[in-house]
Length: 207
Image (cartoon, rainbow, N blue to C red; front, side, top):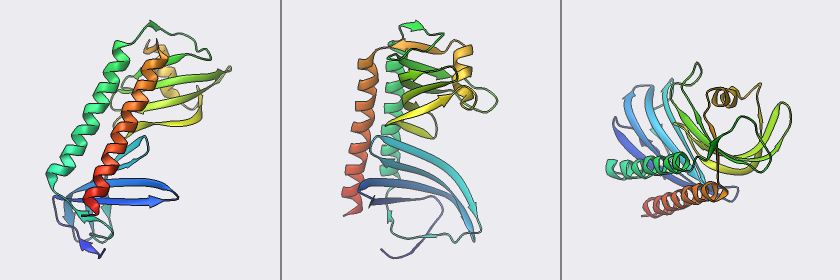
């Protein structure tokens, strides 16, 4: 595809494969000036969605390997993402069994991390606790916040010292026991969503 100049209030799509993984990204360019622009971008791949709202200075307002799309297509995908986020959060809320004050291997947890010094809005996560020691919880995570919505099968090391959000959630009484079926259903909903958007993005991109 040729290099295209970005116009204010324009929408673009990209579909590509990198190292065997299929990706889709779609962007809304808001303000555009001689050497920069503002842009909201969603990047989607298997089970994961990342959002970035950025402002760039000192760069050419051009892009390549993208396709122009209609605002309604961009907004439809954003609506799908936000509706699924809300559905997964509500599943977690409705499936809370009891407040958790300590972690145990084998637990499935739903956490709300309230607004605090480093975080300007509430965010949520599910944890599948694999193991626990004095200063670290090993767990698989589902993350739901403004910039990240997704699941990774890898096991994360979550430390009380570095991952202060866990301490905040614990001290404010916002970690709850839930069921494995709810955790797995949340993963399925996220994977269905990312598969659907990637498939639709590929069809749109290849037109």
